[in-house]
Length: 367
Image 1 (cartoon, helix red, strand yellow):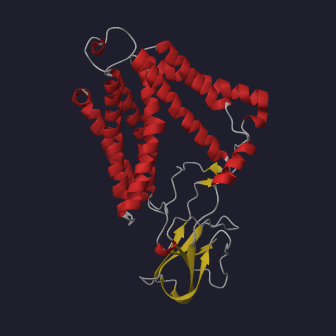
Image 2 (tube, rainbow, N blue to C red):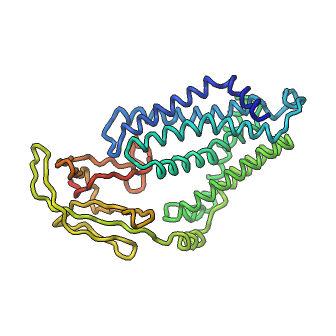
Image 3 (cartoon, rainbow, N blue to C red):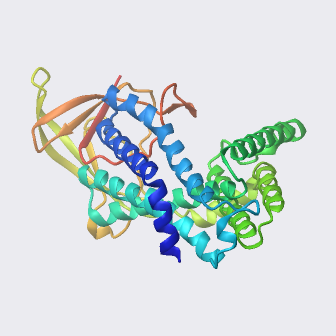
């Protein structure tokens, strides 16, 4: 029966599914063209337009498939047919996963491979992203849609939840001030975010269960309202969050740093010749600083290290450019540095994107 419901929904909604897929492909192309250094203003503008279009499209698709067999009311055809409610719910979730997550997985993987990353790590990263989007965006969207009969009810319900969220934040700030969010703007804020995402998933599952198994729309809407309030008022104490991070965040990983000596350089032709210099291993017990006499360096996670590692590069000035050397080609580039945020605030017009590692050797920044 899951297949029959899926097929029926596909026949009715395939134009919207195809449109969402085309938006995903166009957005991923723009991200690819944007590159590591954000040098394409056209790609930046396309990303700015397509990012909200993508969110609207995937949420609209999740809502539309649920509304094909609405839960509230007594005039639905599926109520009088011998249709198992578990199979109906699974058919809806399967449709969303196949029409949104599978195409997104394919285009994300193609992007990573085009950038030169290996297949398995790229597949793992892309799969993690799709699971996250399914659990924290698409499942909540289907839960809210299940508590409404049509688009008008959906808009009214969402508007009411947003208003409730705003009022709750205002009351919380009025009563507790800065203490309302002990972990905000701290290094442990990610734990509060994780707690909220888990609550979002659990609450969405509860709403779907109430609707598809008991059809208690009023109870489902109360659960949605309670969930919005809990997202604001349930805050992880800073001491607890710090203890958890200390327990979980033991630094691991090693990296090899390779310094280079600049032998020749032609600024007009942008050519150079580098000579390898010292090598050393950097790990949590042995941090390192850039050598002012030999600032050109590259960082490598060698296969024999057998694990993941992260390096954080801290500079003392807000540099505008950085020299990037390509030793295998004998050339170097003076690349502009594009900042996502300054002093913890997102820059105007910037879109927060996960940083991607570069395979080129990095030189010293220039002002």
